[in-house]
Amino acid sequence: MYGCQQHLVNSSPEVMAILEYLCTQANKLTNCGIYYCRQMLFKVGCFLSKAELDFELKSNPHFKAMRSACAQQTLHSVIESFNSYARSAKMFNSGELTQKPKPPKYRKKDGLAVVSYPARWVKLVDGMLKFPLGKQVKVWFGIDHFLLPMPSNLDFDQIKEFRFVPRNNCFYLEFAPQQPQLEKAKPIAENVLGIDPGLSNWLTCVSNVGKAFIVDGKKVKSQNQWYNKQIAQIKSGKPGDYWDNQLAVITEKRNRQMRDNVNKAARFVINWCIEHQIGAIVFGWNQGQKDSIKIGKINNQQFVQIPTAKLKARIAELSEQYGIEFVETEESYTSKASFLDDDFLPKFGEKPVCVAFRRKRWEASGKRVNRGLYRSATGKLINADANGAANIIKKVATQLEINLAKVCREVLMLPQRYKLDSLTKKYRKQCVAWQ
Image (cartoon, rainbow, N blue to C red; front, side):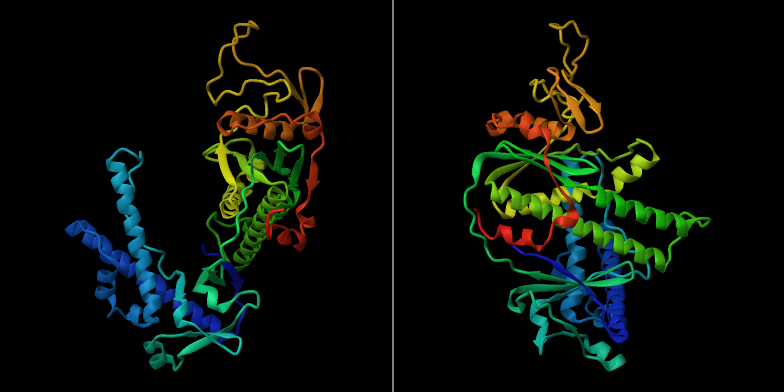
C-alpha cells in the first residue's frame, strides 16, 4: 500500500519557472500522445501499447525537453486512459453501461499537466532533493537539475515516486511512500457504527456499544460561505466565466481548508472506532443526491459544495487500511421513521399500504417537532439526527447480524459533540494499535 503526502512548493523564481516549463511540456506531450492514439483508433481500429507509443514519440521535441523517464510516465498515463476507455466500451457493448463512453479528449491548450519522477532518478544530497532535467534543457538553458528540500517526516528510501501537480497558480510536490504493513487485530464484528451525514451536524454517529457522537460541521459551512461571498464580490459585474489570479488564490485556499477538514474528521472517526473496537461502519448515502437538486439558493449552495462525498471516500480508505468493514446503504425514510417505535424502513418509492391502521400509505410513528428534535409515539424526545443514524444501522441489521439492544433513548438523546477546531495532534497518536 502506498501513501501520498503533499507539500506546497515555495521556492526561488528560477525553480518555479523550471516547474512551469516542465508542466507545460508535459501538457503538450500529452496532447501529442492523445492525437496519435486517437488517429490509430479511428483509422486502424487498434489500441497502442506503452512501448509502441514511447517508440513513436521519442523524437518529439516535447519528449526531448523532459527527462526521458518523466516523458515516458506522461505517455503511459495516456495509454492508461485509452485502456480505461476500451474497458468501458466493452462494458457498454455487453449492456453493463447505459451511456456510451467517449475517447479521451485533448487537454487545454497552453495548460499545465502533472510531471512524475520515478524515485530512482531523484537523489538526496545534503538534505535536498536533486531532480535531473533533460539533456535538451541543458543545451538550451545550461541547467541540468534543480533542488528542493526533503521533508523531515518521511524516509527517502521508502518513497517510490515524486509528482509535481499544478493547481490554481500553485505547484504541489507529492511524495508517494510505501507504507509499512499494519498489524491488524480482529475487531469485534458485532460492534457497528452508523453515520448520518448532514450540514451543521456533519457526521452524526451512533453505535451499538452504548455511545454516540457528532462531528460539528459549522466550521465547514462558515469557510464555504466566506469563500462564496468573496467570489461574488470579485465577480460582481463581470462575465460568468471571469477568472483571475486573485480568484485562483482564494479557491486554492478554500480547497486546502476542505481537504484538512476531511482528513481530520475521517481520522477522528477511525480512531474512535479503533478505541471502541468497532468492526463495521455503516454510512448512509443516496447515490446522485446532489444531481439537479432544488432546495433553494442558500441551501443548494451549502449542501452541494460541502465535500461530504470526499469524506465518505476517505473513511472508506482508512477503514480498509485498519481492517474495518465499510458498508454504504441508502438512507431513505431514516430521518422520518421512529427508531424507538421500531418503524418499518421501506426503500425509496416502495412505501407499502398499511391496512391494519386504515392508512392509505406508510406513515411514521414519530415526528420531528423542532429542528434537531424528534418525538416518538410514546412522547420520548431524542436527537433527530441520532434517530436517523440509528435507523441507518437498522437498514443493514439483518444483513450484518447486528444486535441493537444497547441503542436506546439515552444514547440517542444527547450525543457528544466534537468541533473540528478541537481535533488536535492527539488524535493522530490513537491509531498506532488496537486498544
